[in-house]
Length: 114
Ligand code: AMP
Ligand code: ZN
Image 1 (cartoon, rainbow, N blue to C red):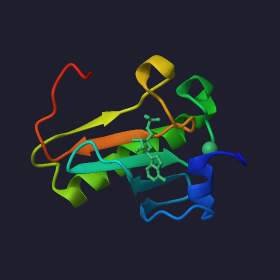
Image 2: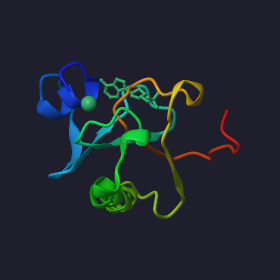
Image 3: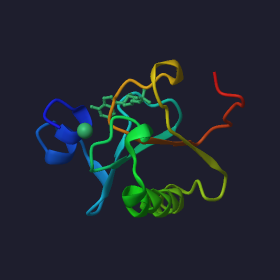
Image 4: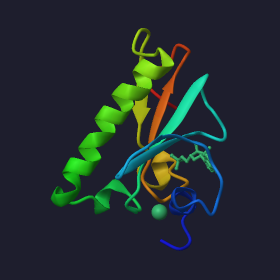
């Protein structure tokens, strides 16, 4: 998508350090971290929200679990715990309309979220 922040980061026209990168998924550090560790795990295919994800996308979306697993081990949060969050739509606070999974940890996280 031409006017999408995360598509532009994926293509390299907006700079960001990819801390993970494969054919279907990449991860970056959130620019405005809400916890000591705050990564964004992002499918390369553009979906505005999860409502656009189809059954044929499930394998690629499923690989997010493997990326989260690797990032948890790399950051040491596999030892203490972490949270994965996806915001969908206005009331959930989604601000970038290319789906992404927040990977948060490094402090005690409150529940329920605000
Ligand atoms: P959401 O509000 O769930 O759509 O999350 C969007 C996230 O993208 C926010 O946590 C922002 O801080 C983050 N963000 C926005 N621009 C950038 C950027 N250029 N690089 C990294 N993270 C970004
Ligand atoms: Zn996009």
